[in-house]
Length: 98
Image (cartoon, rainbow, N blue to C red; front, side):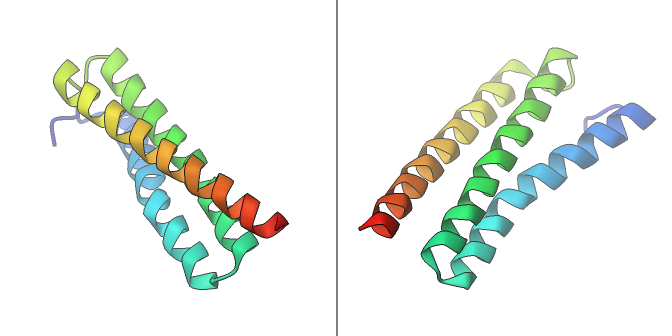
C-alpha cells in the first residue's frame, strides 16, 4: 500500500508478490508429491524463489520504497527460510543416496 503508484512500482510489486508466494507453493507442491527427489527439486525451486523475493525487497529498500527496519526484518526472515530449505535439501539428498 505504501508503494508509489507508478508502472514501475506495479511491475516490481507484482514480481515480489509472485516470488514470495511461490516459496510456500513450491514446498506444498513437492510435499504433495511425497517423493524424495520431487520434494528436493521443489524445495530447491522454493529456495531460488526466496532469493528472488529477497532481491526485490533489497531493490525496494535501495530505491527508498521500504524502510530500514522493515527491510532488516524481511531480510532476516528470508535468510532464515533459505537456511531451513538448504538444510532440508541436504537431508533429502543424503536420504536419497542411502
